[in-house]
Image (tube, rainbow, N blue to C red; front, side, top):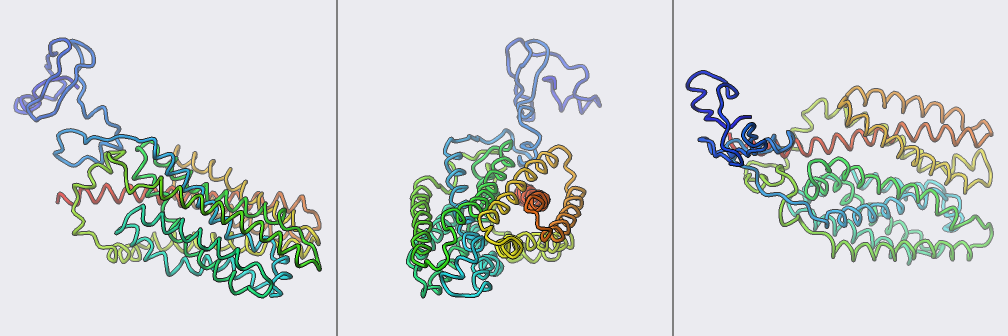
Amino acid sequence: MFACDLQEHQQHGCTPDENCTATPEGKNVIAPNGNQYINMTPGLVQVAFEDLISPDEEQTMLPGQPKPLETKLYMRRFAVLIVFSLYSLVNAFQWIQYSIITNIFMDYYSVTSDKIDCLSVVYMIVYVPLIFPATWLLDKKGLKITALLGAGLNCIGAWVKCASVRPDLFGVTVFAQTVCSVAQVFILGLPSRIASVWFGPKEVSTACATAVLGNQLGTAIGFLLPPVLIPYTKNNIDLIGSNISIMFYGTAAVSTLLLVLTVIVFKEKPPLPPSQAQAVLPESSPEDYSYKQSIINLFKNFSFLLLLVSYGILTGSFYSVSTLLNQMIIEHYKGEEVNAGRIGLTLVVAGIVGSIICGLWLDYTKTYKQTTLIVYLLSFIGMIIFTFTLNLGNLNIVFFTAGILGSSDSMTFQNSKLGEDWSHRTHNYSDNYKQLK
């Protein structure tokens, strides 16, 4: 753009790039409308200051805003992301640590398999009613309080498990797992908030995906470690109890360390915002915002309901397989508890690869709906193949089909997370403009 009087050109009916004269070499010009132009090529070309902002950032600037607000990226953002990813990892580990060795915990606590299954299902049961107050708390009280609740409850649940290592204390371990499941509610909603509050516009998607990846890695470790740490030693309850104690105390120690780091590292927000989207938020009045109304609006949206039901079915299928994997494997392959964990690991690792591929594809094509439909179809096919090849007597086939199932299911998770991140930023943009109407 050349430095010329835009208003004068408009009065004479010409476009801004007609009959413009260059400014003196090395000089910056203040246009009549208040915009500043920088002499990028001396004597020839003048570039608007606003043109230095990316298109995504320009969308978030308030109409009539004369210049961008001050933004800055802080190194602390990486510490926040790492600490969150790690305690999300530990929480996911605690979810699956019982189910992947169901038969061992059945013998130790002298309970039926459905009781052990409940230690996994409680995560899903608790999530449904508590997600609404948890998201309200995140909106009203902010990032740090929510993060501390997640890390704190995760730590408390881990220590209570240490007190449950006795064959007659199954009720205590149920209570401990319930506490951990409540912690999960304050964890799963944070990735997009951390990404938008702490990271720049070009880093948001990567930061959100990294935060989600921590939870997936926790599930992978939860499949792998318990069968190794607690081998099946029939008729030796004391040895099983000793091995369970090692796992529980190790988890509690790590959870405590991460709670301390959360207290030290987490801040509500950086001193200066990381992006224009965050910079204009303080300018917006929260008076017109209604959490209740936003929920009502969501449930009036047919597309949202369709996504909610379809994504819920696929997620439920994946969690069901994860919960029952140990029982399915040892039913057809006796004494293969360790391989059951490795198959679970295969599910998650293949899922991580699928998430990366799907994320790159969506970044390149932006074809959310088409990709969702294709991934849902692949998930359906993967579940059929896994179901009908499980009893063929060949573990190599089970590993292969588990990889297919895991990759397709976790591509679905990545698609939803990218959509969550996009909708979160779009919500911020639209709110800024509503305040000016």
